[in-house]
Length: 252
Length: 373
Image (tube, rainbow over all chains, first blue to last red; front, side, top):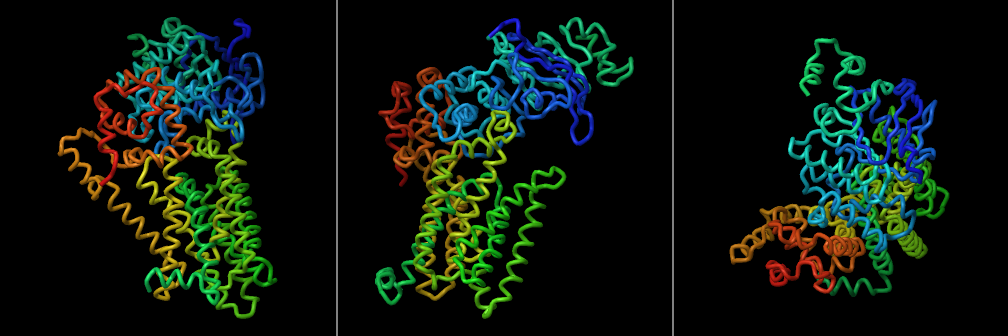
């Protein structure tokens, strides 16, 4: 693997859903070791961008490359952490077994997990610090623990790219901080990590770069740079110069 | 009638239909119990109901042309399941609406078809409410073979079914073929329904599919144990139901369903902490045993080590556990989560414990209290 090749490249991607353009010429690239925050208003196409990166949606124009190869479900070394409500938490399954389902695609049909796979699960659990809860039914976990289960499940397949959809939504501040630190660590270990969020402050605080998305990537850069220039923020969120959002940026 | 008379009747050559009915009922209950686990966990009860009604035109056609009912039902049920799966891909309509359209249509078709047959009222009642007489020998093999096939498929695809039940989008992202697996699951539900329809009837078959699995879900938080308990509950209820219906001349299908329902209500009453077992637990705790159990459910599963160990998913869990334990087990054991600790140690056989927690102060506890009174 060539380190100069971005782990994830979104190249001029346009995409329509139900005849409505959701992305128009979006560009974004992530390198290993980077934690990038994807910020934009509701309906800006954040989740669509993630789904395109996973190969679940086919762009009408442009292309998505993972480690230099076109994205395709099951092939690319890419981990997906969906929003928490996408997961059936009432399902009677232990934390370890839920994390093991992250290897279902890798294992393929009819193959049962072997020692190496359980080892990968144990590693993932340790990485998200859930080893002590490995046998707990997922339904008994708190919000932050649940988020960590989803991250662990994505890590089980040892992906080069990690996509997280609103991982901090609905969590209290200490939990958010804990998770943000975890995401930063995961990036430092050589993964490319992309996090969508509505929490501007924690994104400005924790991310290496921030991408502002509304239909396309309007601006992308280091938090300090971006915070200094209100223009792209006004364009992304469609707000005026007197918006509280901009005052918040100045304060940050 | 006492059970011995029932046994005598079972072996009476003049009543040859009785053991056949019992075999078919118990086999159907076992298959429905296992397939029903996913029906209950995925909230597919409505699909089960739909498929149960959808097999009706197939039965009716088979009845009118004198073909094999089971095969006719399978064809019609699978066809409807495929139609629902295909039409449900249209995002504008939710799946339940598509199901609503097709199952009533199929049922209506069945009624029209069967009205062409002579003696229509009587046979209609048999279809709807089941009968224990007139099961041909060939059905025993068809039911047995179909059931074995369904169970083989569900175990072969177990990890895929679990994965798509948890989170479809992530499953898709991993390259798991969600649509095809859904289709296979629908077909399995169809097979389970069709083999059960004859004894228990078209209307009541849903109970065989849903009630044992729902009862098992009340009792345990472990999928493996649920998939073991559910067919046991179903099979025993079928046996008891048939015995009662034979003794008092009750309709068989209805009696089996009522027995199942009684089991469900029992589980409901005894599952929460307010139940008898919960009270027993508290008594034990007062007797000086420290067991900080929060929910009774998970502990139930863990307190049955022999069952858990015979059961593949549960065995996997302890393997994961072992792997996890070697790394962080000691730290975990020191945490004051008494419930997890106690439960975990109980679930694991001492031999399977990789030097994890045997040195902690709680280890003796499950060994002395692991048996329910």
